[in-house]
Length: 475
Image 1 (tube, rainbow, N blue to C red):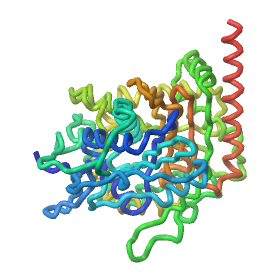
Image 2 (cartoon, rainbow, N blue to C red; image 1 turned 90 degrees about the vertical axis):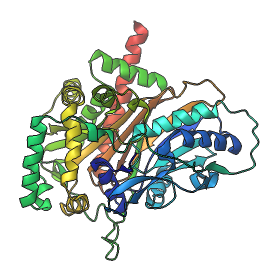
Image 3 (tube, one colour; image 1 turned 45 degrees about the vertical axis):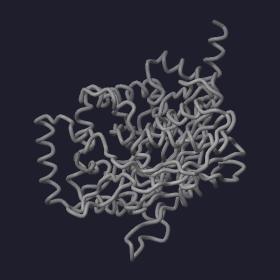
Image 4 (tube, rainbow, N blue to C red; image 1 turned 30 degrees about the vertical axis):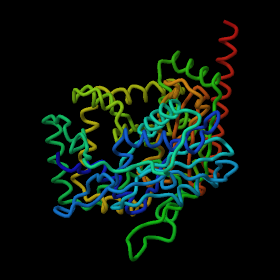
């Protein structure tokens, strides 16, 4: 078995991280009570053994200078991957502190994840590098850790803080990413050829140039809105401001059920409804004097694990860590005022088309990244002066976290990502039996622009949930 080289998608996330354009993202849980250190240590030890990527880093191959996933050769201890923090509340300041101060180094013998424990709120926050993990990977890690935690006795003796010790023989089950096995049609091949030829003659600054019709807030631009102190003249790296405003829409269980019932009546997913609601809020509330253009561009990442199971004839991908994502790009004009459910149905059709009938193309589009010099591409995106999309909605769906009975039960979960180069603002969603959390992170330069939009969303959700609840009660 050869070494496991990075895929083009993983190389994109790697270059973005090396340039310090992305520090980490997190998936967190709140428990009914916290485990003892010895219990958490034993559960971690079992989980790290189960998933090779939890004891891996990224290194450079001496032979061809290509990046590959390297299994860590040294032991590491509990304190290397778990940090107890005394914060009374995981609020906006602490969230920004995490994104400003917690990142990961490559070509080292250290893992690319860390857990923060907040005893005051009984929260555990899993920080991850996007190079080896996507949002669903965070969910899978928590499910495995909780399964192990609920099988461990309440009292357990330990004479070592070690949570990982390398084995004599360790290797990955495969030497490449599943996307590298993805079938390609003649259309994909032609597209790849023509794009390759185009990139030979067209400077990247032209490739990333934004259409004048695209919606942009006048108060937010690159580099000042995104980068602190400009590019480092020695390292060539950046420092993202990560001083965003953090807004959370939390729905209790019954409120979530009411909204889901509304979505079901209108034959749309929760994701499609959220995209429609955010689009409508900008149409209704954004001040025309404070933006240019009219075309909203929305990114919706899709989880491709089930598609990999089906197309590659291997049902194991559902439970694998890694980056199994592709993008759905949606558009909507702020000049068009539509009913929210009509808009949601339009988005629902587009997302379904991309994630089902066009999934072959969606994944082959990810592979087009290997035609680019990714570092130059990222620098060109900053030089473009504005984000390529208006917002992103990333939904991890409903997660029960209760497959295994035991003393540790999840009360709530939350998901968030830092200020980024791709979109103006990011919407990160996860639901549990404790309800629904939608975290929106947006630049503080846009407080006056986006606060009315978010208030519109909150009021709409509360109002419609209440109405649906009253109808259900009457029936």
